[in-house]
Image (cartoon, rainbow, N blue to C red):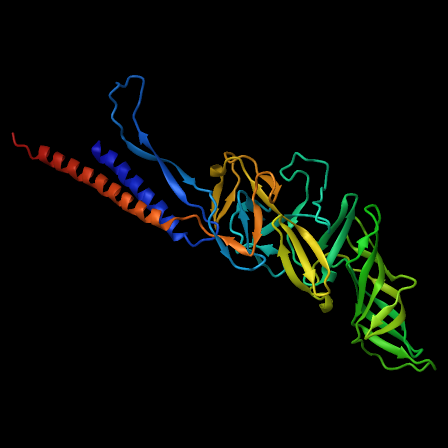
Length: 423
């Protein structure tokens, strides 16, 4: 029996060694949490057993993760984030089902479509907001994990004209897409009395807002007209050759409408008293015809004068995009999450965990509220491994292994002695 009892001790020491080795191996992994082992005694018990039972060894009862925060490493990169305090970033796996995972590793990147993702391609989740930063509630239900608030992937625009604005009774949502652009024909009256017609120009409207939450009318944006083919007719009626348009025309008198069900732009126009400006000159102009995109797929082309110049993330998780023309938009607020029993979470690797029946339900929260930590941009959380302690653990585990080996050796000697007794 002593053979089998000591064998359980050897297995326990080996398991302990494996856990410690894993801790040491991941001491440089961002967001990694230390694991410890919990062993319990094995006892053969029955209603007929005496009160002098001898234990039969040990068994692994559980591995326990220590979710205390690791130290901070400063990177000065906006998409590197850490949670100062309790809580996890929420990331969604690719595909239609999109499983939500929790992670403390905030080393986020962008994919080919400008989605903010983890290194293994999971999408960072944010609350949808309006441009004032108020979180959008898509329904009256507050019993769901999100409290009825809309959660989506964080996608960065390359240009201001890739920002779409969807209207609803609860506010104007800022999203990334192509709804604030169109292609069309423009008629201009030049300062010398000639007229110019530009066909196939790209027309964008950036920074426009709704008059109120119940209307589809946009105004107040900067209209930009680029590209296309220009044909000039002189004041005496002579028509010039068609040439590529290399002039950029802008106006602060752009108007449009947005279909509230799709977020797509319609009815783009210049206000009656609006002027177009180019190279310091003002022009009378009008849009004679326009066609509009039918989908919100991201358009990689854009007005370079309004290219994205900076992304910043506040301690409240609000993600702000700043463009070359100085305009700013809040793209959303980073969503955090937590469960009642963190040790019930299932580890899936890469400092990611998923919810289980023993962890309790996942609850979404805003940063720095309801006991959750704040978001620190430009920094990453290191593992919470204490290498000195882990090395001491190795010594203790080695001694446990040697002691159990010695018990097996001693039992073997005793059995050999008995087998060699001569009658």
